[in-house]
Length: 556
Image (cartoon, rainbow, N blue to C red; front, side, top):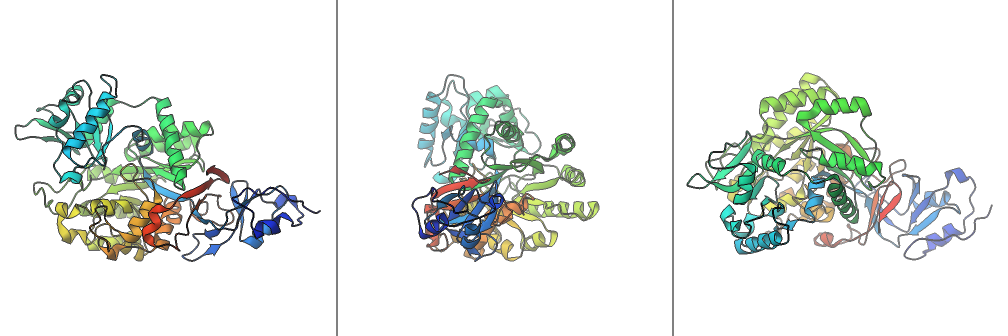
């Protein structure tokens, strides 16, 4: 039968659309629901694999290429002319603190406070806007913006007499509390930090207000959670932000179940929008095993079956675990957050139960201990497709780099951390150790699986800033125009693969997402410039025009 003219949803009607609109076709069961035509598509199937059209049926890609798409276009097919726009697989962010970051979107921001005076002024303004007695949270402060002096409770006590303050450093490893907050949570000069935690004290033995790692978590538990309604509202904003950046899948890697519970609620109400692969607390692996026995592992929108644990702290907080002392504090080599005996026991149990395990490791000694533990567990439990992951992998001895490929351990890294920490990292650990820090290029060239993400809210949930960081490595202070340790740069195609296919592989989602190919979910991002055709310094200026997840346009 002849097919008449049909509507074209687009910015205009191109010649391909006109040809399709007058085409005759028989066999309605094979017709596409939507045909995206006149596009510049990087499929992710290889560094230079391109096509020009995507055909969608249901929630899957059914055809790629103008001829294949045209052959399955019928009168009910919705045609979208992309007018030459650039398309990639949907970006996957393998490391986010999703609900925490979503809530922080509406909290006080101290990230760009340039000096202590501005820091105090912002805290004062935020406290003034809150009801008396309500906790002031948020923060994301960065003391290295004003030379490295740590904030002190005395800075803010006078401007927050009735407001308990617990504002977090941007690495999420330490809090600043005012005196009222210290009193409310019961921290004084006699308090003992829990294992894996630090309570900083002044020369008189009094708490300065700075608490780190396990001590920080103790404070957050005392503050308590938001209501479900507040959490869900914040998460909707986080989902909207992700979609506006072309992000179609995220992996929350959190100590709490807040994101897990929230996304299950949103999914039940049909409000999910992007895909979630959850990594639940490793110490609770038996509870997750019982959950899987009762309910399975979720579905392709909200999925679980992975565990995460933090082994050490962060470089900025001087709690990442190194072999040698910190240059700017020789009294410490960092801390171990999780006892190595517990680490081995928990990973062994979770792995034997068929769960995937990922471990936070930043310092060089921490990475070695974690890799040793993963090797021992794999040997004891026997061969299987386990896909162990290590989160951050920031600082390594040279011998550790080839171990990721050799042990088939995934390196889950965050390129933005390199250009951020690169402003001041030399003060912490000196130049020598930085030669194999943030070693993205070495890891990729070794053949290891490397996925790239943000660690939102530690860094922006914006793949374009991450791509820029991976490709250019220019630090945020503009002091390394040729790249900070430029030998660790990667190509754009390598970085894009790390943000797409490798993110899918890291979640056992390869074959479903991460590549634009028939049979995969129709998850892709449309943007205003061809990333391969522009100067790499313009990557950050990319605008997402539309984001499609599961065959549905959810942004743009």
